[in-house]
Amino acid sequence: MIVRFISADGATTEEARGAPGDSLLDLAQAYGQPLEGTCEGQMACSTCHVIVAAEDFDRLPPASEEEEDMLDLAVGATRTSRLACQIALTDALDGLTVKMPPAARDMRRWR
Ligand code: FES
Picture 1: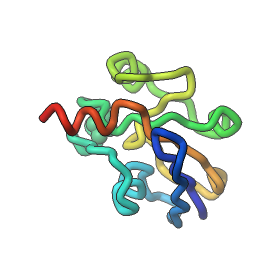
Picture 2: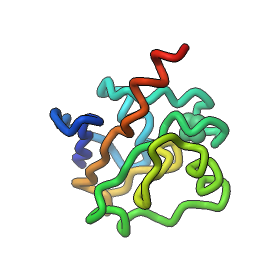
Picture 3: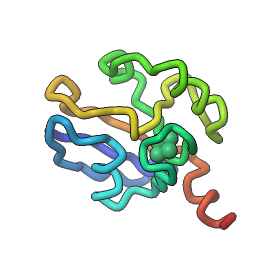
Picture 4: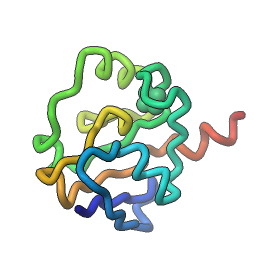
């Protein structure tokens, strides 16, 4: 199954090949996307925030309350934002397109 990662400036698209059960965060990192995932999926950081393409958003299972709370803290969050660590890939998500948030690169610079 294919997942498309779009850079924060929209200039580049990377097509990644994932398998059902993979986490979206792991796949993004395997393909060099700038997602830190500092808490490794514990829903304690929001550095795995991605913006899901509007046309794909409804294909995802809804976010939990804890995920919504973390997204409130994510810089540049939008209506279709999700935490990549909370998304397990399934065949139904083939062709999913997600964009990197504008702040991802900035957060690394602040370290
Ligand atoms: Fe920390 Fe997803 S890796 S919330």
